[in-house]
Amino acid sequence: MKINEIFKSIQGETSYAGLPCIFIRITGCNLRCSYCDTTYAYEEGTEMPIGSILERVAGFNIKLVCVTGGEPLSDKDTPSLIEELLGKNYTVLVETNGSYDIRMIPQGAIKIMDIKC
Image (cartoon, rainbow, N blue to C red):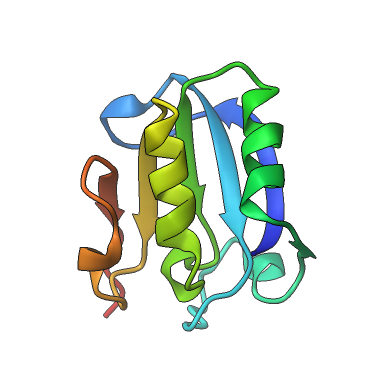
C-alpha cells in the first residue's frame, strides 16, 4: 500500500473527538476538491506492506485508529488493512468521501462519510 503518513494525534471529529488516535493516511484521491486540506496526499507516499503498517501502529500503544486519506477506499488493499486492525482489537474509523461503495469496508469498522457533491 502507498502510505502518505502514520501519526498520533487527537481525534477532532465525530463522537470520538478528544481521544488519542493513530491516523493512517493512505495516498491517493479520486477527487480534487478546491477546499482540500490534504492535497499532499494525492501523490506523496511510501509503499508499505500491511505487516509494516501494523508494526508502526502497534508502537503507539493506542487502540483507536483512523484510516483516512486522500481517499482510503481508492486503494484496493484498504479492506484487508482494516480487517487486520479489527482482528487485533483496534477500534477502526474509516473516513471516506462517499464516492466509493462503502460495502467494501469490513463490518466492525466505523464508517465516517463526508459526501462530496
